[in-house]
Amino acid sequence: MPREEGRKLIAQNKRARHDYHIEDTYEAGLVLTGTEVKSLRAGRANLTDGYALIRDGEVWLEGVHIPEYTMGTWTNHAARRPRKLLLHRREIGKLIGKTNEPGRTLIPLTLYFKDGKAKVEIAVARGKREYDKRQDIAKRDAVREMERARAARLRRR
Image: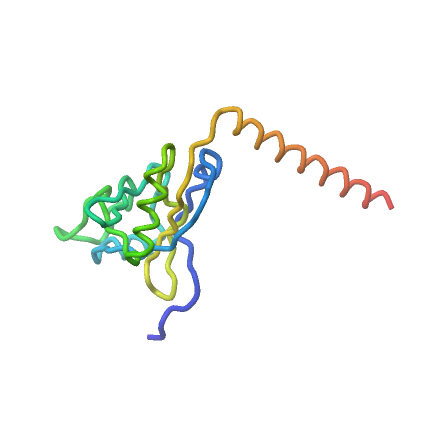
């Protein structure tokens, strides 16, 4: 069987960009069991409640829901268990420095397979205030309205 190549998206945290200012992103590997990999290959995962913690010099992914594999037996995994992230020591040191600043947290943005290996993109993020969210929505609506007007003007020609 040929090796997988490229990037296959499994899950995306769309609320993250709405709720947080993304400052920096990192790609990390995941330590998974066999049934977790099979469940991910079926395209089943949920990142919305996920976050990452740094404990004892290791980064752990918490709150990510990977449902049990339907064909699994007694060897099935727990759906919301903590999963260890694989990062270089330098990257972990940078993350420790950035998350010690007040208001910063680590959140997962995307979960995907890259060349056959499960990866997660985590971000150092700062929570948005309510007025920031409203401002982003207004800006997005204004851009959408300008695009509509431009398209209508091009159609009239």
